[in-house]
Image (cartoon, rainbow, N blue to C red; front, side, top):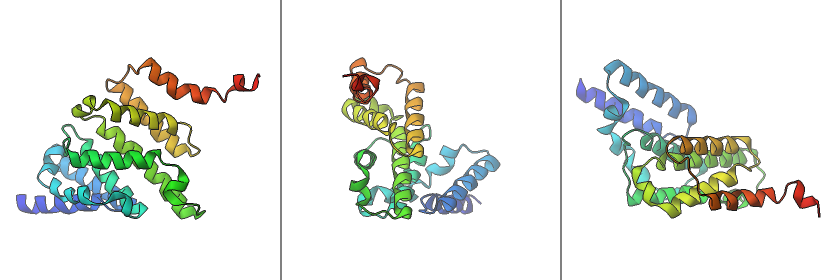
Amino acid sequence: MAFKLNYLVGLLITERCSQTSGVSRVAQLALQLISERTQKPMHELLMQARERLSPTFGKPLRALAFPLQIGHLDALTFGVGFEPPLFEYSDQLMRILQKALGIADADDVALIGRTNQVKIAKAQIELRVVCLRFLAATLRLPEMRQQSATKAKILSVYFQSLYAKNVEVVDAAHASLIELLANGGSRLPKDFLQSELLPEQSFGPQAYSS
């Protein structure tokens, strides 16, 4: 029985990485149902099969198509979001974090070129959102408290994303900041806030008074 359960959990974890959002969502719901029926915490249920997510670390993220990037980052967010996380702080995880940070910080042209295809543009928005969520998940790791430069860059990207044209990106950035403040980051440096907010304020009413 245990072998069959572990096999099923392994299959569902693999499907959790699916580039198709519907498949990924159903796989997660199935895992939650198994956790409830077996009365095992989700972290305990998934720990033995977490190697199914390990190949994600070896993928050249930016070389993948948008749907695959989204699927991999979403699955890693799922794994890192547990307490304790399925994946601990490591060089591999930080490498992916830097890639996700670069994607979230890049402008539209850098990501998709000058194409106007609606499908690609929509995938680009979804990729930005999943990157912001992944960054929020990694900030929960205790080791990130020592990564002040990386944390500051992530915060800067959050603030920049608050002024994005797309409401989904804005909502993701806002939710990430709220989560950060709720989890011990309530004291943001004053000089940091000024550097992030003053450039936007320069476009306010005072900018036109001269």
